[in-house]
Length: 423
Image (cartoon, rainbow, N blue to C red; front, side, top):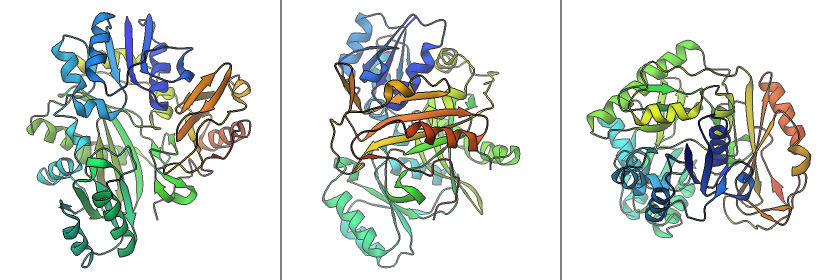
């Protein structure tokens, strides 16, 4: 079969890598992709959010399956357009993708169906939000309602920081229309867990849990990013806690989606925090996590094409996923200044050497190739993933490999995989 992957980051590179392993796949295309993927897939020069052009291209080239990586085309309705044309596509439709596209919708759904989450207020005017800050207890979490690619969340430890966040989101519009409304919620303390599940609307199959590190600096300091690294499995998750998350979060959430008429089919990724009171939902995402995908898919033994198709056809019942028992750790290398302002065009040294290591996977995100050399072309540049005998082994090896890579002002966190509670 011919498969089209939509997107251009490290998550999409990991998806292409996993799809490439399927014996059923003859050709992989990626739109727009990046130059680090071209040994596995052919790039198509169409933006991920250009839905009509993508649908026309897929129709013309007889694409058998399309897999959507990023959230923006899902929220814009790419699944609806492809399905209207009889094209097979993996991902939730436009209505279902609202669980990520609108944090207000997501929080109201959680509240309505009594699924554990932080207490919250919604504001449409900055003046009202500023008034609320005068009587609020700190710390608070301030979220832009719409898509901000992992950067629209601010943990405000005091009133000054909260006011600054509201001004930037609602008045300065640093996230555009995504900041027309904001959610202000109580800060929850505990370990965060990324839970991804395949769901066909009737059944769901969880993937192995992972943990993301969102803040740009060690010790969870600095602004949130799209993700600075991840690891899987999680040593603090036992069978009892897994069952608790299943029964108190996953099943109620999917039941709620059905009651709301969402007909959610695709990959649901839930950020959960483990508080003293039990697991609670931080937010929903309508797609694979990035960089969680870069540690979860390398551990999956199944043919991912079967999972995609069974999800689309509502035949997930009875499916079991087999897992590699080794630990995976991914560290993201970024451009200095990310997630704010950063330079690109720096030559990346050492790639040829590290590509020869058997237990290292190099996932390209923000790179471009000129001649036979790679250069930085984004905030998140590369993701280095190691499969080791245990977590300590994976951590040790990935940081040894990082020493072989260099470009001007390269930045990365040095504490990925060191699982500690937030603040």
